[in-house]
Amino acid sequence: MFSSLSPITHGVTLYLDGQPLAANRGESVAACLLRAGVAYNRLTPVSGTPRLPYCMIGHCFDCLVEIDGVGNQQACLTIVHDGMQVRRQNGAASAVEDPTP
Amino acid sequence: MTHSPTTPPMNADVIIVGCGPSGMAAAVELATAGCSVLVMDMQPAPGGQIFRNLEANTRGRNPGSKSVLAALGPSYRAGVALIERFRACKGIDYRSQTTVWEVRPDGTVGWLRGMEAGYVRAPCVLLAHGAMERPAPFPGWTLPGVMTAGAVQTLLKAGNLKPSGNIVLAGTGPLLLLLATQLCHLGVKPALIGRTDNFSHSLKAMRHLRGGGLSPVIKGVGWLARLKAKGVRTVSGLTHLAAEGARKVEAVSFAAGGRRERLPCDLLIVHDGIVPAIDIPNGAGLALQWDQTNASWRPHTTTDGLATPALPPELEPDHCAIRITGDARRIGGADAAMAHGRLAAQAILAEQGKGSGITPQHRKAVRKALSVRPFLDTAFPPGLSASLPDDATIVCRCEELSAGTLRAKIHAGFNNMDALRGETRCGMGPCQGRNCMVSAARLIMEAHNTSGPVPPTFRGRPPIRPLPLGALASLTGLDPRATELLTLEDKPEHDQEDKAHDPAE
Image 1 (tube, rainbow over the protein chains, first blue to last red):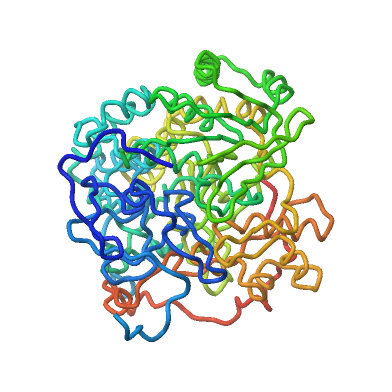
Image 2 (cartoon, helix red, strand yellow):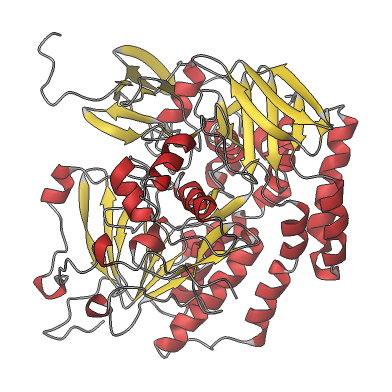
């Protein structure tokens, strides 16, 4: 759906669901995930359908992901940093943490 | 900065929310006159959406900057001087990546940065938080691969990304055509531009042409000529837009010229014009008015941007500290935003006994920049949202509520905004009604069978953006003297929901 205008040169590495991903310094998490071609940022809590960013300026809240352990972060408003841990959200979070690794 | 035993200390002379053209222009004007100014903005760098990431792109920090600058053209580079002046001003305390989750008419602002949050206060708050793209529900608009024109432009400016594959643009407005020409410049040829506006709109718009407003029109004609030269297919009078696909958009269908058509599609870019973002004014309990021409709410303000509180009498402040400027007040584009930002700044300075006052030149600049609006409003009326969606279409993206579900509840008696929200959760999801509010109001109107002003908005309540519990627990700037009087009197059952907003002047 999207391709880079130019290759990443002095990038940072973030981790998407544990897998390393290169990102341009200063870009948003949402832009990085779109470049990687992910199928979704989150599955909705209501019906489990996939969502990707819609507005990219903080109004639609469809780009929500877990960042460094904090859920429901707006990926379009969060700037990448080296070693950032990003997790996609699969439906509603459970109140109790899943004990299985 | 003074503080008596009854008033909490002030953090600045003026707090500005938003760092786009209007916010920057106002900040420079205020700081130059000796005011201390605190500017809060969600983005990592000044510029707003129009000049997004301009500093980094002009410094060539991003690898694709050169091609981005060439594709975006002079209207993007036009922001460089203002950003430089803003950066050079000594009296400006600029706080980037800062979210505002509450504004009160007394001049209190709640902010969040990372996991830090607090309150700051000033005798005047200037809201310069800008606009959003008009929400336009249509079948399939929640599918991955459906994005707004603004979103794609943001990815160009700040994501070093260009779209690829089968691209369809649909909707109306200058931004749709501008984006199409920018994509062509980058070697990306859209499969189709489907315009909801048609020739009769353009013809009607001609009578609004004025000398001062000609240059944007000339620009537009240039874009159309370039698209034609590139061989981009364009249809006008598009209706019945639908995105189709199971887990992502795979095809787009529409009607135009009396024919139904279906095209393969990887990215559907939609745009139905822009409207003032009312989340902050609505959350602050400020009066809004329905703007019939633009089918949107906008804050009720004086020409100098002074807002009007619409709170219950016991919560009403003695003096409203809030002014609103730029596209957040009235859609006018970057030039109008800068001109009004300067005017609003002079109004604030006059109040504080500083500055040279508002001159006829200030007012003339605003009028001139806005003079093209009647033409644009007539040439590009709302299209994708012109008629209300069918029953199966999702209206509330967050809670996945269809128009049919909402219609049934409205007919069952939940026929005012807050009752509908309470019953269905429409507007209670993470976006807090930003995308469904106007559709919900129009569905209520449809049930009442009226064509008058639409009902009021959902009642806004802070925090208007998510505030992590950890940040809330360590809130700074709390002041017992500023404790808000709590009352149950403003619960929906005490509300006069039937009282519609006054029509626009």
